[in-house]
Image (cartoon, rainbow over all chains, first blue to last red; front, side):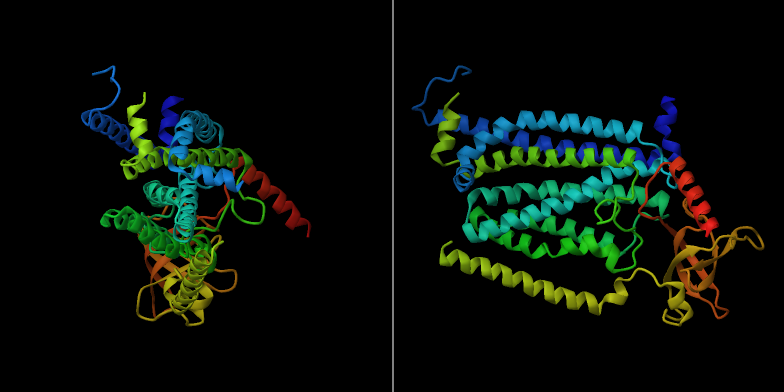
Length: 60
Length: 245
Length: 148
């Protein structure tokens, strides 16, 4: 039953790469901007801390 | 309405609203994606001619639709950028480009994986495939041009012109299969007649299309926030944002 | 809208119209090159290129597929419901190749009027349905045409 499903009527070599490729591409499009955003926020925080005159950061 | 539009157009306001919407959009996307995949992979029967191989349709067709849709959004933003000089439109335009390029790539790649077993070839230079490939180059051109110009406000205007010029390719892609003999078949769903696809296959197809649309808004919000922060890093609201919390 | 904005909007409009008109003429001039294939009628009428590779597309005529000789070479007729051309092809046919199916063959037209293909591609239609539905539709179609 399961192997029959995975076999895709003999077209597994075409169907599953399509789905896999879509998963990878969609995940990258979501993850990369998110990471960029987080790093940017972190950098800005550090920058503003270094210039002084700001409230105490609990994590420092 | 105009006031609402104007308010949403202000970068700090958009930044906040988009951040609040992301978790909800993520949840809606997950529900649509899972039901679409379930309907497409488990419920939908095999095709009378193509057997199981046609299941690539649930990735291929929504990707192709999104590749056209996102380009139209970009061209529309381009008009807003050139005429109204709106900052948010600049950000939406450039943030859309990588997502659009990804969907175009997916449409081409899955089409290739579908074409090999069914047509007997990975690629042919017919009107539909060629015009879709040109679309990929247009997206890459937008990304490259934006990266090449350091002043992002000038870069945005250059990119806006390219996005608007390229929009003439969109009707060519859509009608290519009707205007010229091509290997690619005619439209299935987007024709005036009744869609020529069985309901049990149409429902998951539309679910996947909807899921991809929500995904676009979701990732657009995500990358627009990053782009906004980058562009406005010297502004007051970003300073307040990074000091707060 | 301010006059400056109106002017910019008009400029964009003009630019788009200009590009669209230019492109229309360019595509019309290139029409023959964009056409992916010729129909059998065009081939019979001598509109297809001579002594050079070209593609021909049409439906495989039911009952015309045969394998004369070694069994590796397939011979069949392609029709556009008007005229038909015989095709010879040696090689592996795509999964969708069957009688009544639309196909595109790339090759040369021989002196004897037989099209010698180097490549055969299957063109599928835009219909998707379960096998049972296709079967049922075929039956109703047969009874409908049988009654006429």
